[in-house]
Length: 354
Image (cartoon, rainbow, N blue to C red; front, side):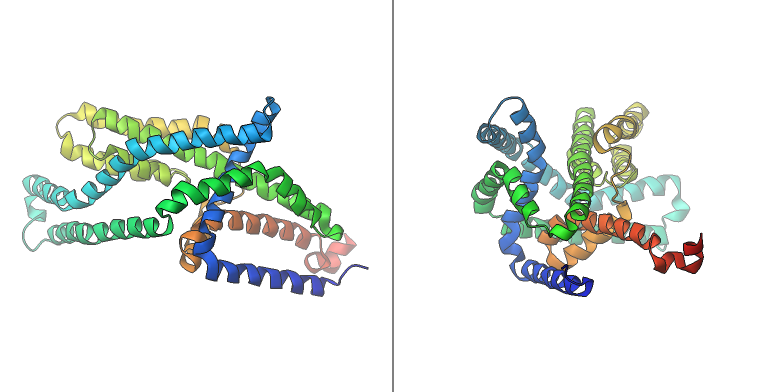
């Protein structure tokens, strides 16, 4: 005899509260394991494909680990220091950029830039705020990230956790599947498949799109010779999960800096604008259709809400679990909506008669 729905809701509610409490009190302790699980989830399709090519699971895991270590070392040596230095320099030079903008406006629109002008006062205030607060924000982010992701976690714990989780991923999924309540096994499996499809489309697909676009923008802007091109490309790629916003924000920043650096050389300025037009065309016509698909089931606004809420509640760990939790809630909400429309509560007497 199955448990009444009320009892089932009670037990699953207790489990959900227990999960929230664990994340609340042990969030920082769980961080390397959450990171390792996320990396193992993203790398599992590669391991499965290597197995289909004839490698054992152990050899596939070892090969993936070696490649990941090489990539991490190369990025740490070549890319990360340059990115950090450009970001710090951009914050420090912001007041000078606003001063140059004041000079430009004063030469062409002197009536707007007198001492009592609101425009002049606003530009001065913005420049000082960016220098004072921006540097503090960047240093705070870097110091907190280094505090959470310390050297031991980066070098030892996360790779080890990722290795073992990736090695046993399929077996662990099978063991979890055996624990699913028998009365609801088919329904839960269906929901799990939909959640996995949503996560795969967003994390693997959209993550790859963000990486490709960030690399394309950063490398292209650096080859053109734009100052701070790498950090602008990274920003544009990072926020490209919101349609058009990455190209708009990155393009505005790049063109704004290009006006100061290449003033009079309109061909270079047009070339920088063309980079973002090409990136947007690449994203819309090639990357997103091929890697993400037509719909991932995660609306950008819903994703931003989840990131904000979980980040405020659980800090950096909350940001890591926000996407999978948002995907799960979205799938369950759609499932509940379908059930609701088939229920007597929605259809009522008239629906039943029809």
